[in-house]
Image (cartoon, rainbow, N blue to C red; front, side):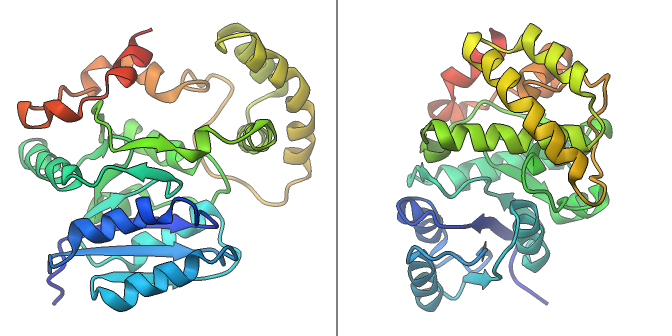
Amino acid sequence: MSSIRYSICATHYNNGEYIRNSAGVFADEIEGRNDWELVITDAGSNDGSIKYLRDLESRQENVRVIVEEGLTIGEGRRAAAEAANGDILIQVMDLDANYYNDGRILDITCFYENLIEEEGELMLSVGINFCTSNLLQELGGWSELITNEETELKRRALRVDKLRFAPIRVFDQNAGLEKGLRDGIVRFYHNSAAKFQAGVSFWYMLYHWARYAPGIKPKIGAFLVFPFSWISAKRAVGDVDHSYDKTDKYLIDFKKTVYKRRPELWLDPPETLSEYVDEKEIEHIRS
């Protein structure tokens, strides 16, 4: 019987610039803790980061690295979760970020354990997701999508009232938010294609984005990108199983819409986590 109770799960591809401040931080946090493990799937990185991950694995018994070329983000998340031994999964969304190395992951885990002891099994989103392995299995696990896989899983949790949020900072910089125009367009293209493939109509998306997207640049981007992503979705082979539809009220900004429609799902962090509160997150969801 495994002694592991907590599994930090992540998937990775070519984030060598940030790997020491993400995977390296998590490895430091759990070093010497026999009831913790770090499980990372890698899609075949070619920037030298696999060597760093293998070095971590060789130095720490509770670090495991699984390399499988060609994994999508959703497939990588699913593989990491399925390989994990813990009852509680700390599911890291991005390894292209600088995570705080101050013990807050351990503190938030204590908060999560108290939460599920009081309210039963839940998914807690704080920039990374906390979930029991039993609940993840009940929800059907990660979908093998190339994008939107996190929001899609949260939608399933929301439908059965198993989702909670808390405005807590876990990293101080996310490289994915600072990439150039080309990367932003590519990400927007894949996100919109996933919605079209799932059944959202072209005209509804265009109307919804034109009406609710913040600022003129996202609106212009939608008019330029949507035709191409719609064509891509129509040519795609196979069905995508998730909850988008033409009446979806959570289409544009999931977290913000949840706050407006279900404010009780946003939890106030306890005093023990007050120094980690994300004021920018609070300002965003309330705007």
